[in-house]
Length: 365
Length: 218
Image (cartoon, rainbow over the protein chains, first blue to last red):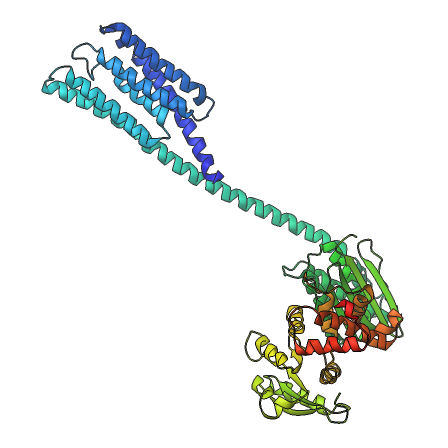
């Protein structure tokens, strides 16, 4: 809604400024001369009508130059005053002056009405019709005109009215075009924003990846340099760890409803590929876990699964107060995990079996 | 308890391989459990020999996408002891089955040992809490869940995580029978809420007899 209102606010103020210029030029450039030259009976009525119209223009100008809509009260008073001034000025025309050079007010009043009622098209049309009818009525009441006079009056009335009425479709068309242009611009802006955010996301992902490839890169370098022997158990274990970390890292960026379970499943899948029998259990409804906490929660799973020999039990449990990711597995060596400020890590060994649990309290109580 | 007589069970499942496998597990257990009949329709549990079986082993997903909750309710209301044996590990459905009065909820990932124990317990009118069900109970966040003690919650969680009661006992420094009695107590707490069912009433009555629950708790 705001988008469609913005161009309207833009077109109408500009149109009104243009109309203000037209009104000023017509009134002070074209109407002063007949007012001085012709004999109006009484003259003060014509002067008063001119003054009223000048006042209406000036009052409208107060809002128009500030590009603000003219208040309804001003519009009502201005319209009534304009029509009254028109009637007064037409009433005191010299004989035979209707629609001719002495009739300075006929065209000017139409411009005034446009200036006042540009946004209120039905009222504008009514006011213009009233103005035209009143002028014609006064023309006919002033005496029976001959055919030439009727023709001349018709041409003037038709010409003036059609030019003034043309402003209405013109402003509508401008308004429509302006709205189209605005929506195209907004769409383009949206696209640019999306492109920029996608680029930023990609840059961030590169940084995150680069930061987390830490274990993999030296390992690959050592393997390539022949420092490490691929037949060595320890090297294999390090490869398993790197592979599991990478799988978890790839899973981290997938758009899934339950990212924590998705990442744990990826780790389990990696262990299953090595022939480890993994039993994965998930309970409790999914809760939103921030990605850094997820990384901490899954890190014991990664370490333990990478070291598992033949079986592992992985479980994810979401209770009303915490999220617990636990893994039990038969591991050959000691599993090392970093302690974390975000999650509590609990590790026990029972013979060959290791139990590792990471716990994140959703409620800080 | 039907110690002298051989226990009997009826299996309702729509997969022939599952029917055959479960029948084999039950009949080769020690002591063996007799499978009186089996089929892919719940009618086998109501007709003929099936109507007399001690335990009904019911698959919740009989061909259709919607679980056969209505069948479970009718069986339980008729006083039948039902072990739900489902393909899916779905906490909501597991809790709903307990609410209706099923004595056990097992997922098919849980093997023969859990099914045998659940069937024997059910034949005696007792509840059996398998690890997946323990997870569902520990993760229960519904407003009307019963209040569990810290130790009970810990037993549930450890059992869910390890699948080994020996491990739970060792870790928490309690005996195996204490682990079992905690699990039983939890099930009694669950049986005391919600809709009434003959099996649930029997569970609670038994718990009172055994001194697990005081009458004040009710």
